[in-house]
Image (tube, rainbow, N blue to C red; front, side):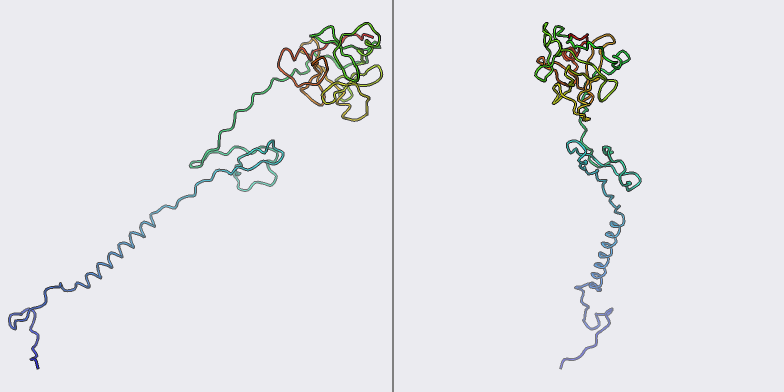
Length: 279
């Protein structure tokens, strides 16, 4: 049996020849554990500080989404609806008006620029103080209507249509070119014209014809024309009651309703003089 020897004090290894193990520093395992714990603590603190210091990102303002206008809008236009300041908008508020354009906000894409407004077309002449007064009871000889740029031609009913023709000496032609100017059927300040056989001049499909009065509201409007004068003492142009902006104009010597044009030719074609009846 080996002899048991008592372990000498470590501070006096020379007494027994025993020396302590110096290959590993005392407490190495504890140092590693302490270091790992410190590293974990530092990592956790750094993460917490990063999370706490991070500012909440505000959601970007979304641009107003385009909404299709109702069927009353022409062509299904696209409008940008802007939310009301007070939150929800009352039901039915703002109907019948186009939605306003959205106000650009920071970070939100701006809406595409609206197209330039179309140029306004020139307005036709309006009735002025120098325009002819409302018609009175016509004289028994009637009224004939002569063209300004073709002064040798008059309105004449032929085959149901009103044409601009030269009138000879025959009684039938002269009767066809003579009308009774009466108070407008649809507007007392305007004119209506009747033929010798009691028919009225009216526009149908924008062409001037002679028809028997059927008593309808449409007929009364089609047979009523309002005088418009270019100058107080000048000739008159006859504007339709139910198609404002369209005037009786001769084209290819046939009378029809044409929309107003700002041209010398148009103004000449729609200008007429009312003279004493030819018959």
